[in-house]
Image (cartoon, rainbow, N blue to C red):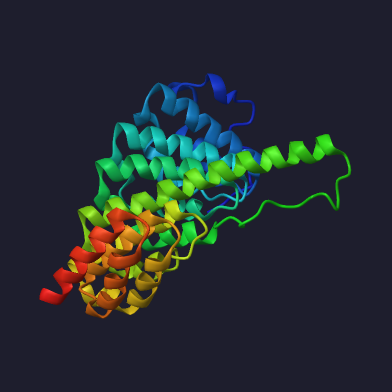
Length: 301
Protein backbone atom coordinates (compact mmCIF):
# COMPACT_ATOMS: atom_id res chain seq x y z
CA UNK A 1 0.00 0.00 0.00
CA UNK A 2 1.29 3.47 -0.85
CA UNK A 3 2.43 5.51 2.11
CA UNK A 4 3.24 9.08 3.00
CA UNK A 5 3.51 8.47 6.75
CA UNK A 6 7.30 8.92 6.70
CA UNK A 7 9.95 10.20 4.35
CA UNK A 8 11.83 6.98 3.52
CA UNK A 9 15.46 7.26 2.45
CA UNK A 10 15.55 10.93 3.44
CA UNK A 11 19.15 12.09 3.41
CA UNK A 12 20.40 9.06 1.44
CA UNK A 13 22.65 9.74 -1.55
CA UNK A 14 21.37 7.18 -4.10
CA UNK A 15 24.46 7.30 -6.26
CA UNK A 16 26.81 6.15 -3.52
CA UNK A 17 24.84 3.49 -1.63
CA UNK A 18 25.70 -0.18 -1.33
CA UNK A 19 23.63 -3.10 -0.10
CA UNK A 20 24.68 -2.65 3.53
CA UNK A 21 23.88 1.06 3.62
CA UNK A 22 20.09 0.95 3.38
CA UNK A 23 17.20 -0.88 4.99
CA UNK A 24 15.28 -2.93 2.39
CA UNK A 25 12.03 -2.13 4.18
CA UNK A 26 12.74 1.57 3.80
CA UNK A 27 13.57 1.18 0.10
CA UNK A 28 10.33 -0.71 -0.43
CA UNK A 29 8.39 2.05 1.33
CA UNK A 30 10.02 4.61 -0.96
CA UNK A 31 9.13 2.63 -4.08
CA UNK A 32 5.52 2.38 -2.94
CA UNK A 33 5.19 6.03 -1.91
CA UNK A 34 2.53 8.28 -3.43
CA UNK A 35 5.18 11.00 -3.76
CA UNK A 36 7.01 10.98 -7.11
CA UNK A 37 10.06 12.51 -5.44
CA UNK A 38 10.23 9.70 -2.92
CA UNK A 39 9.60 7.02 -5.55
CA UNK A 40 12.40 8.53 -7.63
CA UNK A 41 14.72 8.37 -4.64
CA UNK A 42 13.80 4.74 -4.08
CA UNK A 43 14.34 3.65 -7.68
CA UNK A 44 17.61 5.61 -7.88
CA UNK A 45 18.83 3.62 -4.88
CA UNK A 46 17.79 0.41 -6.65
CA UNK A 47 19.75 1.42 -9.75
CA UNK A 48 22.87 1.90 -7.67
CA UNK A 49 22.37 -1.42 -5.91
CA UNK A 50 21.80 -3.27 -9.19
CA UNK A 51 24.97 -1.81 -10.69
CA UNK A 52 26.99 -3.37 -7.88
CA UNK A 53 25.05 -6.61 -7.45
CA UNK A 54 21.73 -7.55 -9.04
CA UNK A 55 21.05 -9.90 -6.15
CA UNK A 56 20.69 -6.86 -3.90
CA UNK A 57 17.41 -5.86 -5.59
CA UNK A 58 15.82 -9.32 -5.67
CA UNK A 59 13.74 -8.70 -2.54
CA UNK A 60 12.38 -5.56 -4.23
CA UNK A 61 11.56 -6.96 -7.65
CA UNK A 62 7.79 -6.91 -7.21
CA UNK A 63 7.94 -3.23 -6.27
CA UNK A 64 10.37 -2.31 -9.04
CA UNK A 65 8.44 -4.28 -11.67
CA UNK A 66 5.34 -2.17 -10.93
CA UNK A 67 7.05 1.08 -11.97
CA UNK A 68 7.99 0.98 -15.70
CA UNK A 69 4.68 2.58 -16.67
CA UNK A 70 4.77 5.09 -13.80
CA UNK A 71 3.09 8.41 -14.55
CA UNK A 72 6.50 10.01 -14.00
CA UNK A 73 8.61 9.09 -17.03
CA UNK A 74 11.92 9.48 -15.16
CA UNK A 75 10.80 6.90 -12.60
CA UNK A 76 9.66 4.56 -15.36
CA UNK A 77 12.98 4.84 -17.18
CA UNK A 78 14.94 4.12 -14.00
CA UNK A 79 12.76 1.10 -13.23
CA UNK A 80 13.27 -0.24 -16.74
CA UNK A 81 17.03 0.21 -16.30
CA UNK A 82 16.96 -1.99 -13.19
CA UNK A 83 14.84 -4.62 -14.94
CA UNK A 84 17.32 -4.56 -17.82
CA UNK A 85 20.11 -5.48 -15.40
CA UNK A 86 17.96 -8.29 -14.01
CA UNK A 87 17.08 -9.54 -17.51
CA UNK A 88 20.79 -9.74 -18.31
CA UNK A 89 21.79 -11.53 -15.12
CA UNK A 90 18.79 -13.76 -14.47
CA UNK A 91 15.82 -13.52 -16.85
CA UNK A 92 13.98 -16.19 -14.86
CA UNK A 93 13.59 -13.66 -12.05
CA UNK A 94 11.18 -11.67 -14.25
CA UNK A 95 8.71 -14.52 -14.58
CA UNK A 96 5.27 -13.08 -13.82
CA UNK A 97 6.69 -9.57 -13.41
CA UNK A 98 6.33 -8.11 -16.90
CA UNK A 99 2.88 -6.49 -16.85
CA UNK A 100 4.03 -2.92 -16.21
CA UNK A 101 7.00 -3.29 -18.56
CA UNK A 102 4.65 -4.41 -21.32
CA UNK A 103 2.26 -1.56 -20.51
CA UNK A 104 5.21 0.81 -21.06
CA UNK A 105 5.43 -0.37 -24.68
CA UNK A 106 2.38 1.77 -25.41
CA UNK A 107 3.83 4.86 -23.76
CA UNK A 108 3.43 8.24 -25.43
CA UNK A 109 6.93 9.01 -24.08
CA UNK A 110 9.11 7.63 -26.82
CA UNK A 111 12.17 6.93 -24.64
CA UNK A 112 10.05 4.91 -22.22
CA UNK A 113 8.71 2.82 -25.10
CA UNK A 114 12.15 2.39 -26.64
CA UNK A 115 13.89 1.27 -23.45
CA UNK A 116 11.05 -1.11 -22.63
CA UNK A 117 11.32 -2.51 -26.16
CA UNK A 118 15.05 -3.10 -25.73
CA UNK A 119 14.53 -5.08 -22.53
CA UNK A 120 11.79 -7.22 -24.09
CA UNK A 121 13.96 -7.73 -27.16
CA UNK A 122 16.72 -9.07 -24.94
CA UNK A 123 14.35 -11.17 -22.87
CA UNK A 124 12.57 -12.82 -25.81
CA UNK A 125 15.88 -14.24 -27.02
CA UNK A 126 16.62 -15.94 -23.72
CA UNK A 127 13.12 -16.73 -22.47
CA UNK A 128 10.41 -16.34 -25.14
CA UNK A 129 8.02 -18.24 -22.89
CA UNK A 130 8.05 -15.34 -20.41
CA UNK A 131 7.12 -12.85 -23.13
CA UNK A 132 4.60 -15.06 -24.96
CA UNK A 133 1.59 -14.28 -22.72
CA UNK A 134 2.02 -10.59 -23.61
CA UNK A 135 2.07 -10.83 -27.41
CA UNK A 136 -1.34 -9.22 -27.83
CA UNK A 137 -0.60 -6.36 -25.43
CA UNK A 138 2.71 -5.64 -27.17
CA UNK A 139 1.03 -5.52 -30.58
CA UNK A 140 -1.62 -3.22 -29.15
CA UNK A 141 1.11 -0.94 -27.82
CA UNK A 142 2.66 -0.73 -31.27
CA UNK A 143 -0.70 0.13 -32.82
CA UNK A 144 -1.46 2.78 -30.19
CA UNK A 145 1.78 4.63 -30.93
CA UNK A 146 1.53 4.81 -34.73
CA UNK A 147 3.07 8.15 -35.76
CA UNK A 148 1.39 10.63 -38.06
CA UNK A 149 2.06 10.40 -41.81
CA UNK A 150 3.42 13.93 -41.95
CA UNK A 151 5.49 15.97 -39.48
CA UNK A 152 3.74 18.67 -37.49
CA UNK A 153 3.51 22.01 -39.30
CA UNK A 154 4.47 24.68 -36.75
CA UNK A 155 4.80 27.57 -39.22
CA UNK A 156 1.45 28.95 -38.10
CA UNK A 157 2.71 29.28 -34.53
CA UNK A 158 6.47 29.86 -34.92
CA UNK A 159 7.81 32.68 -37.07
CA UNK A 160 11.55 32.32 -36.59
CA UNK A 161 13.10 29.98 -39.24
CA UNK A 162 15.83 28.79 -36.89
CA UNK A 163 13.33 27.89 -34.20
CA UNK A 164 11.17 26.07 -36.72
CA UNK A 165 14.17 24.05 -37.87
CA UNK A 166 15.12 23.20 -34.28
CA UNK A 167 11.59 21.96 -33.60
CA UNK A 168 11.58 20.00 -36.86
CA UNK A 169 14.93 18.38 -36.06
CA UNK A 170 13.72 17.40 -32.60
CA UNK A 171 10.60 15.87 -34.13
CA UNK A 172 12.66 13.95 -36.71
CA UNK A 173 14.90 12.51 -34.01
CA UNK A 174 11.94 11.54 -31.84
CA UNK A 175 10.22 9.92 -34.80
CA UNK A 176 13.35 7.86 -35.53
CA UNK A 177 13.38 6.59 -31.94
CA UNK A 178 9.67 5.83 -32.16
CA UNK A 179 10.17 3.89 -35.39
CA UNK A 180 13.01 1.92 -33.82
CA UNK A 181 10.93 1.10 -30.73
CA UNK A 182 7.91 -0.06 -32.72
CA UNK A 183 10.02 -2.18 -35.07
CA UNK A 184 11.72 -3.85 -32.12
CA UNK A 185 8.40 -4.57 -30.45
CA UNK A 186 6.70 -6.09 -33.47
CA UNK A 187 9.77 -8.26 -34.00
CA UNK A 188 9.45 -9.39 -30.39
CA UNK A 189 5.98 -10.65 -31.28
CA UNK A 190 7.39 -12.39 -34.37
CA UNK A 191 9.97 -14.12 -32.17
CA UNK A 192 7.19 -15.33 -29.89
CA UNK A 193 5.14 -16.69 -32.79
CA UNK A 194 8.16 -18.45 -34.26
CA UNK A 195 8.90 -20.18 -30.98
CA UNK A 196 5.39 -20.84 -29.68
CA UNK A 197 2.81 -19.79 -32.30
CA UNK A 198 -0.06 -21.26 -30.34
CA UNK A 199 0.58 -18.81 -27.51
CA UNK A 200 -0.30 -15.86 -29.76
CA UNK A 201 -3.76 -16.94 -30.91
CA UNK A 202 -5.35 -14.07 -28.99
CA UNK A 203 -3.00 -11.59 -30.71
CA UNK A 204 -4.44 -12.10 -34.21
CA UNK A 205 -6.78 -9.11 -34.12
CA UNK A 206 -4.09 -6.83 -32.69
CA UNK A 207 -1.62 -7.94 -35.37
CA UNK A 208 -4.20 -7.42 -38.11
CA UNK A 209 -4.62 -3.84 -36.91
CA UNK A 210 -0.97 -3.28 -37.87
CA UNK A 211 -1.47 -4.28 -41.50
CA UNK A 212 -2.37 -0.75 -42.57
CA UNK A 213 0.34 0.90 -40.47
CA UNK A 214 2.20 3.85 -42.00
CA UNK A 215 5.50 2.01 -41.51
CA UNK A 216 6.11 -0.90 -43.89
CA UNK A 217 8.75 -2.23 -41.52
CA UNK A 218 5.96 -2.76 -38.99
CA UNK A 219 3.51 -4.21 -41.53
CA UNK A 220 5.95 -6.85 -42.79
CA UNK A 221 6.73 -8.52 -39.44
CA UNK A 222 3.07 -8.30 -38.44
CA UNK A 223 2.30 -10.34 -41.56
CA UNK A 224 5.06 -12.79 -40.67
CA UNK A 225 3.60 -13.22 -37.19
CA UNK A 226 0.15 -13.93 -38.61
CA UNK A 227 1.70 -16.47 -40.96
CA UNK A 228 3.37 -18.24 -38.05
CA UNK A 229 0.11 -18.33 -36.11
CA UNK A 230 -1.65 -19.70 -39.19
CA UNK A 231 0.74 -22.65 -39.17
CA UNK A 232 -0.48 -23.49 -35.67
CA UNK A 233 -4.15 -22.74 -36.24
CA UNK A 234 -5.50 -21.60 -39.61
CA UNK A 235 -8.95 -20.99 -38.16
CA UNK A 236 -7.58 -18.36 -35.79
CA UNK A 237 -6.20 -16.29 -38.67
CA UNK A 238 -9.02 -16.93 -41.17
CA UNK A 239 -11.14 -13.99 -39.88
CA UNK A 240 -8.42 -11.53 -41.01
CA UNK A 241 -7.76 -13.16 -44.39
CA UNK A 242 -9.31 -10.18 -46.21
CA UNK A 243 -6.81 -7.84 -44.59
CA UNK A 244 -3.95 -10.11 -45.60
CA UNK A 245 -5.19 -10.17 -49.18
CA UNK A 246 -5.34 -6.36 -49.15
CA UNK A 247 -1.61 -6.37 -48.45
CA UNK A 248 -1.07 -7.89 -51.90
CA UNK A 249 -1.70 -4.37 -53.24
CA UNK A 250 0.78 -2.69 -50.91
CA UNK A 251 3.28 -0.39 -52.61
CA UNK A 252 6.19 -2.07 -50.80
CA UNK A 253 7.35 -5.28 -52.54
CA UNK A 254 8.57 -6.77 -49.26
CA UNK A 255 5.08 -6.40 -47.79
CA UNK A 256 3.55 -8.03 -50.86
CA UNK A 257 6.00 -10.92 -50.67
CA UNK A 258 5.36 -11.44 -46.95
CA UNK A 259 1.61 -11.37 -47.58
CA UNK A 260 1.95 -14.05 -50.24
CA UNK A 261 3.85 -16.25 -47.79
CA UNK A 262 1.25 -15.78 -45.06
CA UNK A 263 -1.59 -16.49 -47.47
CA UNK A 264 0.14 -19.72 -48.45
CA UNK A 265 0.40 -20.77 -44.81
CA UNK A 266 -3.23 -19.83 -44.27
CA UNK A 267 -4.27 -21.96 -47.23
CA UNK A 268 -6.44 -19.17 -48.61
CA UNK A 269 -7.56 -20.61 -51.95
CA UNK A 270 -9.71 -17.54 -52.65
CA UNK A 271 -6.50 -15.55 -53.16
CA UNK A 272 -5.41 -17.64 -56.16
CA UNK A 273 -6.85 -15.31 -58.86
CA UNK A 274 -5.08 -12.32 -57.32
CA UNK A 275 -1.86 -14.32 -57.03
CA UNK A 276 -2.09 -15.25 -60.71
CA UNK A 277 -2.43 -11.56 -61.56
CA UNK A 278 0.63 -10.70 -59.48
CA UNK A 279 2.56 -13.52 -61.12
CA UNK A 280 1.86 -11.94 -64.49
CA UNK A 281 2.03 -8.22 -63.75
CA UNK A 282 3.94 -7.37 -60.56
CA UNK A 283 6.91 -5.09 -61.16
CA UNK A 284 9.09 -7.13 -58.80
CA UNK A 285 10.42 -10.41 -60.18
CA UNK A 286 10.72 -12.04 -56.76
CA UNK A 287 7.09 -11.23 -56.01
CA UNK A 288 6.07 -12.61 -59.41
CA UNK A 289 7.89 -15.88 -58.78
CA UNK A 290 6.57 -16.29 -55.24
CA UNK A 291 3.02 -15.48 -56.35
CA UNK A 292 3.16 -18.10 -59.09
CA UNK A 293 4.57 -20.76 -56.75
CA UNK A 294 2.02 -20.04 -54.05
CA UNK A 295 -0.89 -20.02 -56.53
CA UNK A 296 0.24 -23.44 -57.79
CA UNK A 297 0.64 -24.72 -54.23
CA UNK A 298 -2.85 -23.58 -53.20
CA UNK A 299 -4.41 -24.95 -56.36
CA UNK A 300 -2.79 -28.32 -55.92
CA UNK A 301 -3.67 -28.43 -52.23
